[in-house]
Length: 181
Image 1 (cartoon, one colour):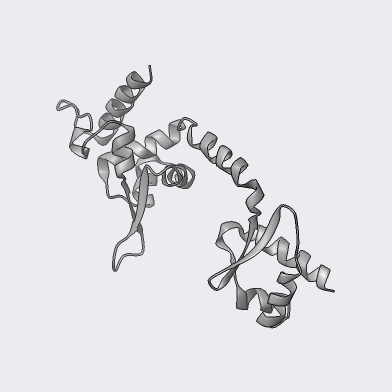
Image 2 (cartoon, one colour):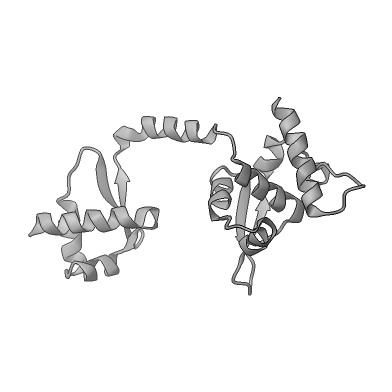
């Protein structure tokens, strides 16, 4: 019975990923008390994975023995170039900040969740909550400025003859591509 419950717990924790599951909710799902849930979780022993309680949630995490390999993976991932969609999204944010995801999608005409997530993960963009507003605001970070060799947003390339946001983005990409060469 305990092995069946642990498999259910593992499956649920895997499915929710880095969100974790509230202890009370997980206990309710497997029809046990939080104390019984704790006992079941404490019996789980695996070479690679572990179930950790952080605050009021349980998470499925890798064992510390994988840390050196995970660090290599994260480093390799961060060294990858940005996709065209991510670059477009970054330019929109840089020239129009603060903006919401909805603003970006209206400018690009397509869903931008993936590029926004990538930019946040890479530390180029941050998402902040504004009091009284449901939508989160996106803006570039200090790391963005350092990465692109800017001291402030005023250093972003601008062409006085071009007035539209699309033209500013084209200029940004042109300058960015010249730096890569």
